[in-house]
Image (tube, rainbow, N blue to C red; front, top):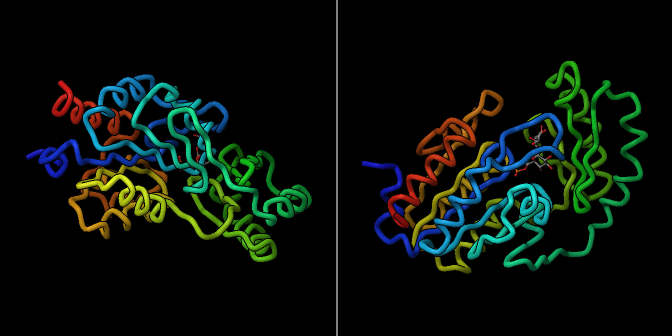
Length: 256
Ligand SMILES: O=P(O)(O)OC[C@H]1O[C@H](O[C@H]2O[C@H](CO)[C@@H](O)[C@H](O)[C@H]2O)[C@H](O)[C@@H](O)[C@@H]1O
């Protein structure tokens, strides 16, 4: 029996919740160059009318995920960006005022990173700041060295640290992918859910899927970098290509 069986009982009530980087878009060294696989948008366009809804829950700014995903013309799609702070749907973006701690962290981080290993780079997402180590000579070592510096700054600025794939993000508290998924599933009255992710931030969405009280399928977009999700997933697929193949299998079943 296919792992998709819980959704196939009543596809019109099914919610598909997807992460972006590492799930729809292959991981690359420069975050500005990440793009969803070209097959992703067409399969979502095919799937969306047959399902209750599709939601992308990402650490990216919502508008950027739409742009990098080529998703602007996918209807019945909502993008919850910045771990749920932002919302994009049908071309409309809702974004809250900036947390004051972000401005303070933005001012202080450059000085704190002055002695960081060569290749550490800062991504300013407006509502959050991401410190990346992927482009350093020893990314894991660099990440460990920066952990306490970033944690101390989070403490001083009222932000929280969101760890991810060779990245430490400083972002506002109060929202995460689990809360975002729980609220969205209730809003659309989902009768079943498929949730797919690759990174530590997606664990909260896995937890939420298990607590919704509806049939849930947890999909790990597998990688050598993060192993925690595989242990919790119903199925592990081969990175973004595997995720898109699974979505195509779903589309073939519900929107032939
Ligand atoms: O929730 P997501 O959609 O998975 O976004 C999480 C973070 O993804 C991005 O960083 C990751 O992907 C980069 C591009 O492939 C890669 O270079 C980096 O090492 C990864 O951590 C993004 O840059 C962050 O802003 C997102 O929050």
